[in-house]
Length: 135
View (cartoon, rainbow, N blue to C red):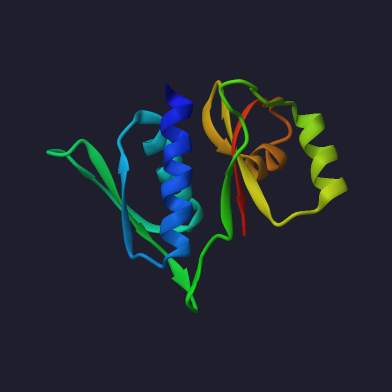
């Protein structure tokens, strides 16, 4: 069930940013709230507000010079195919591809970005790759 809501979140955010909407309503779930707080902490959205009567979240998008603050969001893990990465695989992937952006990874310590995993390499962190955020 959680990947359906995460997929719905990615689709709504992608459409809203392409249409240059100021805000978008998203179905409320614990995982979506954690992803939104991570995107807010990284500076890719202006903020979000939980609507209690409608059981949804109102997300305020952020634009820089008329363009979205992020290029796009992609869903990596799907219900039929889960994707798990170790720290070694992440370091190989970053050095080979060299894309600008980060991945949102679900670990036993909560949701963290791939850059946080790489910076804190002394802790052996790995987990399920949920989203790819291109800048």
